Length: 166
Image (tube, rainbow, N blue to C red; front, side, top):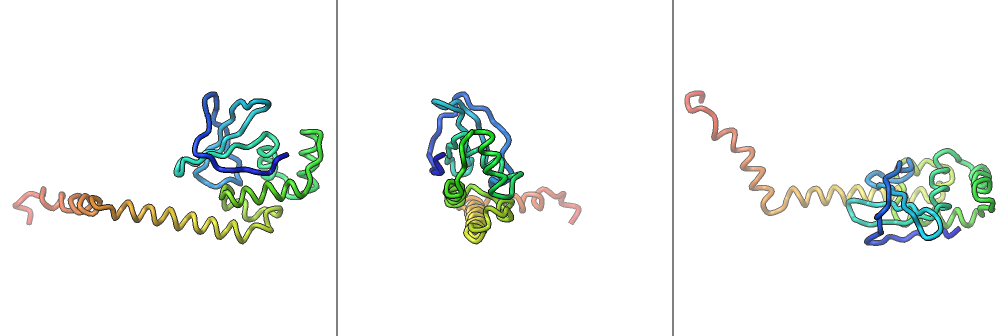
């Protein structure tokens, strides 16, 4: 299994269908299943940044199994039953490190025992993402025309009130 995951600006979603998003992924991500060259590919899409990440079947299996398996031994046994090959701790750590580095994991992942070594970085990244979203929201509300529009909306009810009611 290749533990590397990298963001792309575009991914072919031609025959893809939307599937349930694993609980450990952060909010705002959507998952699609599509046909790959040799096996199905899972495409994770961030609608706000328009980035895509492609997961091999084995990588996505681990991501889904992390929802129910909290110990490496149990996860490795599930992996071996499914793929008839051994999952090394190194391969898991590479995948988990990439998930954290690519900012794909959410708050639910921060309490997972296998993600504990990455918890501090994950929480810092989640805080940074939140701050970025707040900054974007503030920028939109402080855009050149936004203040005038907001002022006009507030002033509109006052100007339409009947004259005799004052």
